[in-house]
Length: 189
Ligand SMILES: C[S@@+](CC[C@H](N)C(=O)[O-])C[C@H]1O[C@@H](n2cnc3c(N)ncnc32)[C@H](O)[C@@H]1O
Image (cartoon, rainbow, N blue to C red; front, side):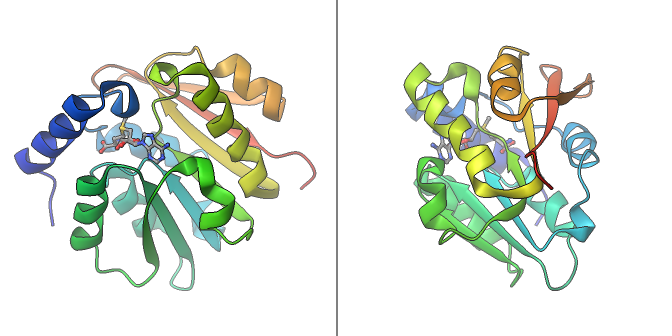
């Protein structure tokens, strides 16, 4: 099903219920999502995890890039958005989890992911929660696996460097507001 005004309203409703947790009133643009996904080898991945899948803009693009035997676990904390994701995609490779990315290890049964794609609004989250969520990124990855992070400010860059070392950074102007894209690799691959 295509994106539309319904998705804009759904995100706006979720934002009004939890402004800091949603952190955006407009869905991310497809162009910015594609630029972020270009930073990892998704066609080669067996297990991909998406955090804060929202209206499914990135979910759709990830599924379009994955191989036929790969799996995508999309985690979303907002119940209405999680329900909508389940209704919207009938792809057997996708499992939607209604829950918090803080419990990522449990959602994955400890299975390491090749790529983690984060749509979480780290900058607007309370500091302790932000740290716990950022800690989950390297923990969820196999050695050599990649974390892709989209943000509307560069503030999280230092925290990503502390956890991953080098971080590749891009800016996508094709988003409102312009998006910062970060690609991090878990050492040891
Ligand atoms: C910036 S929005 C992403 C919106 C998405 N890019 C879109 O265009 O639809 C952030 C999303 O993260 C979700 N979220 C926030 N905290 C979360 C958590 N701890 N676990 C899972 N999802 C979370 C919010 O409910 C929201 O859907």
